[in-house]
Length: 187
Image 1 (cartoon, rainbow, N blue to C red):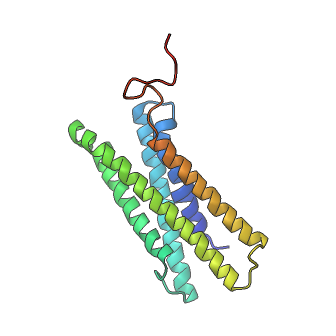
Image 2 (cartoon, rainbow, N blue to C red; image 1 turned 90 degrees about the vertical axis):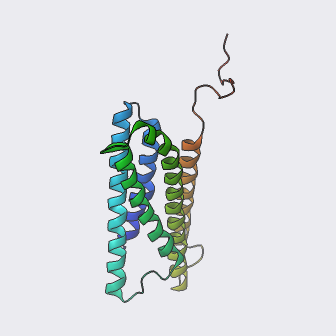
Image 3 (cartoon, rainbow, N blue to C red; image 1 turned 45 degrees about the horizontal axis):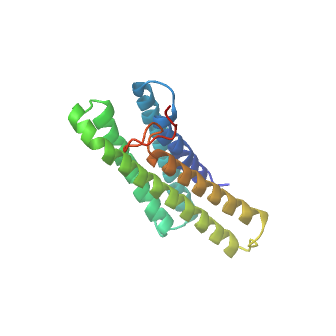
């Protein structure tokens, strides 16, 4: 089994999802949640970057061309943008930290760009599953074999995870609606 897809899946998708969700779901203080968000994204970026390194190493040692597929192009773009997003977030919101006015102005763009990068990582993962399945089937794997079903099931779980993460972080706050409507009837 190749280790680079696992590193990228754990890094960008699983830990990346946790990092995104941590900002809104953890019960701790704003600063603690922000630190957890930052650290989880750093771990995700490290694992994803190491996965890319291992993929290039594997390709070079096996005589396989690099960057020949849409999966690799989207994946490389996602990791570069992930890194830029992390650095800009670190400098703006953590250390040294921008002025409160600039942080307020940057926050919506940071959130939107983060969602775009996350969706690109999901797209790269889905393209990776498709590419892997295509290679396996070209090598004689049956279309309904247990390996094919496992790849498709894993891809579906990743897609659903990504959809739920994006829906959750883009959902309005649970308190009161901006027009005064509330999900709880006031007496």
